[in-house]
Image 1 (tube, rainbow, N blue to C red):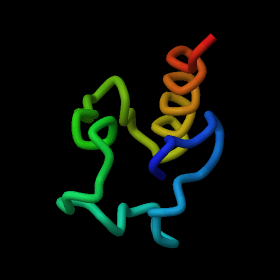
Image 2: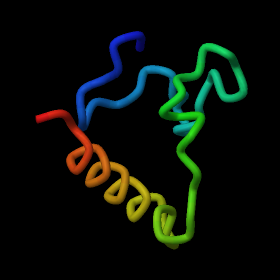
Image 3: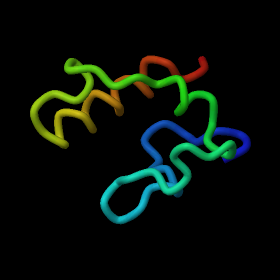
Image 4: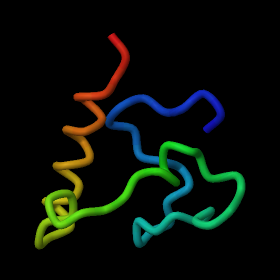
Length: 63
């Protein structure tokens, strides 16, 4: 995604299990490479993590 992706849009690099197909690749964006998971981000469930990421996208989208 050379120009990034809109907030709320699923990354097309994710497989059916929501795993990054280009993890560790030079093609992976710097934003993704620099994102470090934390207990606050991941929570106890996948739905918590998704809510956190959606809010992060909203909070950081350009004006």
